[in-house]
Image 1 (cartoon, rainbow over the protein chains, first blue to last red):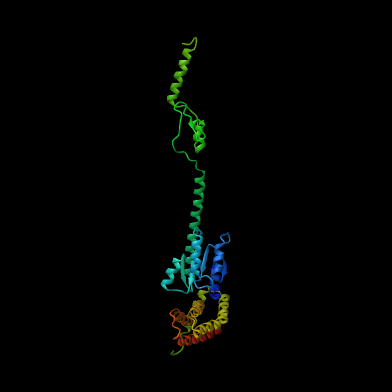
Image 2 (image 1 turned 90 degrees about the vertical axis):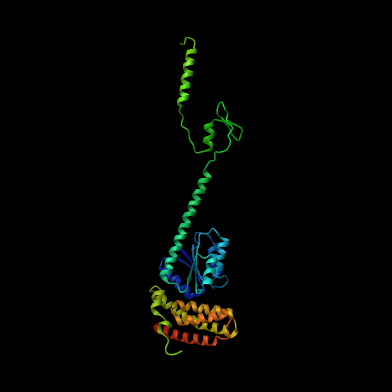
Length: 209
Length: 117
């Protein structure tokens, strides 16, 4: 899994990067906020979905990177963590309000970081599954044929008049507008009526009884 | 300050080993980086105090605080945090004792790091 690390302190970046590599993450390291934002905005297959950002960095601060990502890419499936030496409650609140999903204080505890990254990966996987489901549902909706409204039907032959003003047999009309299919048979009242008509026809034939 | 500072507060090797996941190569690399960067960091702090620049003091002291935290160097981290706080509060006039404490703590830390490496 790809992870972006943004920290202008080379010691903090080295410890974090090496820890993540030990856990077999594919790590990209940058040393300022503008560069971090460029990586996250790329939105391609190589864009990291998980980012661990320092707060105080040159050009754009970590909290502003979070703010810009949420504003400019509100639907992007990205998990943003702030990892900073700023440990006041005010900074934690402001950091999470900026759009960060999590907030850790330096130096990170390896076990805690691992557990929090697992939370992030769980959220990312869940969001990805939901996005796939939404796509499937959208595709299904596109294929649904709609059959509703007031239909003009002939009282005698039961043909229906379509929007094109042509009269169509009811089964053709419904088949073209839904996934319904028809099997052909004869219902008992019609069978009785048909038998009666045949009998009458036979009787009326010259020489009939 | 009375007596010698607590060695573990100067530099906690066990905590540093845990922080670096038992990776001796990484530890050597971090110590090397710190020994290279630390003098310049302290001079940036001193220049900010002398120049009366609170934002520069906050930024330089914050950076040293972060590096010292990863080295498990509590005393240097604490001194840098005090200076960062002074910068945030704009109290640059009372920083000479903080600066002296930082200089002493950094000297102890560098000695401890050179001792193990």
